[in-house]
Image 1 (cartoon, one colour):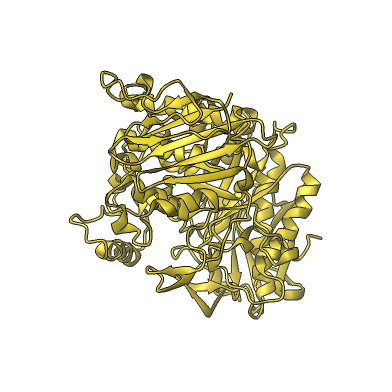
Image 2 (cartoon, rainbow, N blue to C red):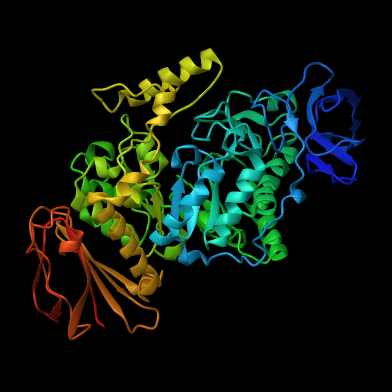
Amino acid sequence: MLHAKLPGVKCTANTCTFTVWAPQKEKMLLHLIYPQEQLLEMKPLDYGYFQLEVTNAAPGTRYFYRPDDEKDFPDPASHYQPEGVHGPSEVVDHSAYSWQDQGWRGIPLKDLILYELHVGTFTPEGTFESMIPYLDDLVHLGVNAIELMPVSQFPGGRNWGYDGVYPYAVQNSYGGPDGLKKLVDACHAKGIAVFLDVVYNHLGPEGNYFGQFGPYFTDKYHTPWGDALNFDGEWSDGVRDYFANNVLHWFEKYHFDGLRLDAIHAVYDTGAVHFWEYTYGKVRQLEQKLGRPLYMIAESDLNSPKVVKVPDVGGFGFDGQWLDDFHHALYVMLDKEGKNRYEDFGSMQQLAKAFSEGFVHSGDYVNFRKRKHGVSSAGVSGEKFVVFNQNHDQVGNRVQGERLCMLVDFERTKLAAAAILLSPYLPMLFMGEEYADQSPFFYFVSHSDQDLIKAVQEGRKKEFEGFQWDVEPPDPQDEDTFNRSKLQWHKRQSGKHSIMLEWHRRLIELRKTNPVLHNPSKNDLYVQVLGQQGLVLQRRSEDQLTYLLCIFNFSDEPLAFTPTDQSNQWFKVIDSKEEEWLEKPEVTGEAAPQRVDANQEIQIAPCSVCVYSNK
């Protein structure tokens, strides 16, 4: 018999076993819809589970559950919703897919070059399989890990994915379970790891029937999206198992290499074993079973190293976390309007701290929060942080959906790329960033509930009121808002877009081949601030034999710098002012010298980056 704590459906030769968790219901009916309609009573088990073995049921069978014989609802643990969030669930046989990645063993954490993308806007077709022909472009770029925005079933066909309501089900309009497996298989064949963004802090409103089954939610805590999920109250064991096993589901059934966990600070649990610690133990066991690394990357608002510390020393056990402070500190150096958006950032010293330590706010008072925030992350190794110039939030939560290249000029966009790719952290690009795509990335939905549509439309307007924008945000429900957010792949082939693409490719190649950039240790990194104009990253390899000087000038004036005597001579590796990297090649003469002696002053051109090596 199927283990009671695994809700869902498991099939053998001619029998399917249906299991559902509904601890406060006295009765549960299984309503088979297709291919033959039947209404069957399920058997109660311990801990609030109901179960039934059905002969002559098979993959493709569609069904509802009927709690207390009142009304039909889809399975909360459905693996496929072919007719959307309100339709019947469909039985999926995961063993039917023939995987071709048996030799895949993953990629070491510190070698990852991440690339975040939204399936619906990455290609004109907006499906998993339509992405496969584009993978060669990512390989040529040097990307070795893609991160999919959430693909769990959401209402309609247009959504960021954070309104998903069936965490085990793969979005039907993207291509469903088989489409996703084909994409992961194709990525592994080309040496690309695959990460998935998952959401365990809330569920979307439309199609959310979880409350009809059990106490999945609690009013003990509140999140920005409403009542929190019940990870520590009465009947919380079922909720904890549901979501912890969902993590394993993606690793086992879909061969994902890692998960990005949305807003982990909004998962509230005051029990003896925190949900994240509980999940950590399950993942480590599965990792041993599968024989490959399984990564968990957190989005956290805590500014606390405990996120990436193991539970043995009081941590949550994540392998890494997004570093928002790095983005904020860098952005205000690039965009003169940045201070209006991030009032607690604005000094070169803060950017230096972001490079050398990680968290900028480590116990100091933060105006935005009206309190002191964070603790130091100076002792946390570089591969524990993911840095970026933009992501879905940074772009999509601007009223006009502007990417960085639409906010700052070409030279500053190159500076931004160099900052993340020369850092000791894991770099992440947002789709299209590598060639300065100028398509906006808006927030979009396709709800069917008219009241909800109106609430979302009004909510977006209210959200932007505090920023004093002089335009209104586009209508999230309008299909044109979604279509305008699609990438313009053809632009990468010409003009400044092809230059930017090659700039990213060269920096990634440098990161992969230079021993200094392989070293994530902060003990081998020193940051020198050059007033409010720029800074220098002085980095060395693990064997202490190779040194790099990464000189950044964020100002509009030339910047003087004198290399130290760590080497008698320094040799230029890359310079954003060399002719091949200029948007207008006729503007020449600003490149730094190819070779300089120790203690010889050099001039670094305005808005540029130059890298020197001792060999």
